[in-house]
Image 1: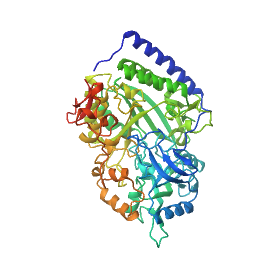
Image 2: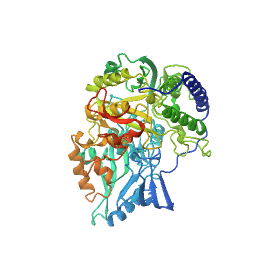
Image 3: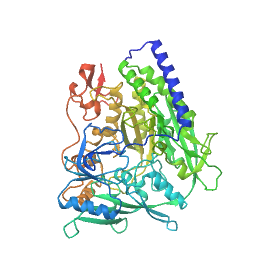
Image 4: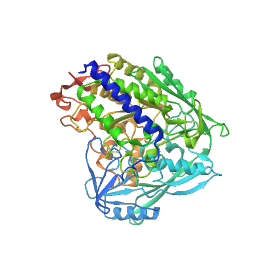
Length: 592
């Protein structure tokens, strides 16, 4: 693959990025008190009627618009029961939406335009805390940030969780959200749940709604189905977590070359409780997270406020996006790589947002309490500032717009998979610079789970974030390399997708990968025999009816299909359907 660039343009481009990104980082490091909070993902024409729902990024994978006749905002379980009963009585379709709607796939969508969105935005209360039993019961709309804070008030900690605290308890349960660890029960939040209260459709004798109380001992099958439910069993009302005494963590980031990474990735997770990696394959580097539990009386008051999750200036975000669009148009691979090198060096040099005392970073290790170290997302916390700043993916800012591909590869196959990616990079060292513009490949450890739709084995989860064009028919630079990695993961290595991320092809035939799929579908049929909480999308990914593949011109560019003919790519722009370079069974859109 060639790039149309001149040395002068490349130099000017690198200088531009260096200047802009340094200003951006200086602003981000000192500016935390202002930001425009995200909009409600549900928007209605009049009051709570004639509504649409989107995700926090403003666009679903197939760019469709999801509609419903109404939205309801219950504030108590009793109100929730009443809402579900009324809809069940008339056979109305329902889907649950959350406060910030961070799932990329169409999990919030209901069928047609006559359905009902049930938002958990105001089901956001703590029900009870029991320090002696070390449990905390909250409503399903409570955010991860609230959960962490409420636990800390009584000296307790959730041991593992996602790094972004804008997800809700119900959202985490619905999609199997996780942090990174092979210790204890693993890093999945749902495996630290002891009780779930679920409101499902009921019979006439039930008053058309039924409150089910699920535990591992009393209802094991239903409990393991509800732990990762995709929202098809009903609405989670309350969740009880088994917590641990508050502890501290000691964190140290180390950057190394990736020569032996394929070996290190297999063993590193057993050496550090909260280990993860940021892989920069085009640079041949890996950032190792050496992160371990230490005693609560260990000196240190560190905190983690991850830089990309902070309030950021809208003008800078828009300019950075414009610059990347220009690089794509000019096929300026060198410009992308120069920018990626600068970004990764700056993030590493600023410790990604770690501070030793809540204010400044003075050196490693950073020691801090679990509630200050595990998750962040300060761009959600500030007051309205008229879109001068905001979360970088806020669609109103015209900043970041990206695809995310996320999957788990069994630890037994990690070495081979990493070497396959290295083989691709050897063909063109610039091929994955686009990933490094978006932080790099984040890799987190997960363990097998008793949840029927949870992880099947100990694995490494890969998160790939990369450029998405505003025009769905516009191909990307190195389109074929990223498509080959995606197909290699899901079809050569039989990877499991993250339920809350990914493009459509990740979910094609996915239910066959779960040994307890039939048990899950049996519980679904029992709870909701009329499929009122199911949608076309959930029926497709659960293998009930149809599949998620969408065949049309350009469909492979957005991950809606795997190309089988040139029209599925962008032949008028020089992109044709070709075999993979390393994984020959892949079919990718390659630039000729």
